[in-house]
Amino acid sequence: MSQKDFRSLHYLQQQDPTVFDIWKKEVARQKYGIELIASENYVSPAVLEALGSEFTNKYSEGLPGRRYYGGNEYIDEVETLAIERAKELFKSEHVNVQPHSGNPANMAAYFALLNPGDTILGMSLAHGGHLSHGMPLNFSGKWYKVIGYETDPQTGLIDIDQVRALAKEHKPKLILAGFSAYSRSLNWQLFREIADEVGAYLMADIAHIAGLIAGNQLDSPIPHCDIVTTTTHKTLRGPRGAIIMSREDLGMRIDKAVFPGLQGGPHEHTIAAKAVAFQEALQPSFSIYAEQIIKNAQALSTALQYAGFNIVSGGTDNHLMLVDLRPKRITGDVAERALELAGISANKNLIPFDPEKPIVTSGIRLGTPAMTTRGMKEEEMKTVAAFVTQALEHHANEKKLQEIKREIHHFTAQFPMFSE
Ligand SMILES: Cc1ncc(COP(=O)(O)O)c(C=O)c1O
Image (tube, rainbow, N blue to C red; front, side):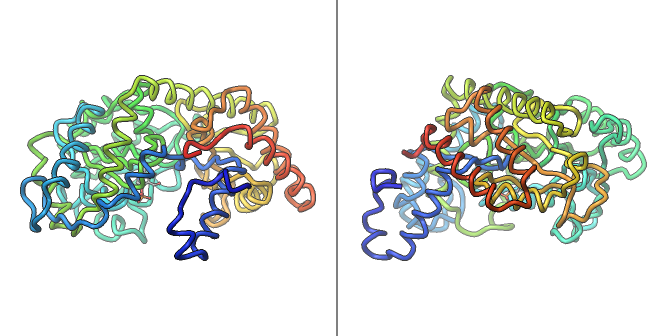
């Protein structure tokens, strides 16, 4: 990469060339690789600038207008702006924009509604749920009694009859709909009905699909849920962080759970960047982006099926797909490594009823938000599928993987990163 490929980080370069040089290597990796990690994206230059702004210098425990530190006049302005924009974007009555990330947002949501030992019914991690939905080593699995619902072995779809049966049997205080590795739309209304049948709160975690909902491509859970959490990175294409949305009457409980319940001072530079990202997502162009993400995921899934891969549930309605590698006789860990050597980022992932351990897995998860941001369309997804196929076929041949990496370098150079 030449000097003109990099943003100017003049002071960093002068003062700390060691960090500067590592940053350059990471930028080159992002620019010349194919990024298929479903939870990653490239933020805009405006989001990056807000993240690197002087808002980071300020302590502002509390909420706009009710702070425990002086000098928060402009911080109040920017946090209020982020709240108002998020309310407009998701049509939510109440929003807290302070959670540092998705895990803490879910922790705050549980903290607001539950007591330790209460029962949560959520999607099993082994079937596409997230670790903060009740993995035994996570706080959620340690502090709450967690029951997991699964996908149907035949269809790969959530078994909603099982959700209802488990809800009736275990009488959870909270039912959680949301996932990290599931490629189909959820029927929020059905979840609501089940929650009402057993008197449970209904929470959605839309961390993965928030951008697709904001871009009007998937149904919103907001009208059906008591509480909705989301990260602001991933498809929403904002800074790393999260927000919690809820009905107005739960708002105070949520605000208190975030601060002083779990967090101290909010990260106002990130909150400013969230405000910028929400404004971007409110533009008509964001709906076009969200629509293209899904078209690209469907094109990639079809091309991979054509190349002999098995896609769990037969395809995708959103930005991601789970590839079952068993027909290719390769495990997820080996596939992840081979793809990495070829310049493709992806992650190994358990598939439903996976016979392998989580550190090995039989699958990989692929997603299209990042490559869509770089301007790729359905045609390029065929090329991406061909690179993935070649890399996995030659997974044991490092020389070949290096060759593929060079080809990928030329391919990705045609698609600028957002920050260029
Ligand atoms: C559904 C879901 N919820 C929560 C999180 C946690 O977000 P974070 O990594 O920001 O803590 C993730 C992250 O992948 C996720 O997929």
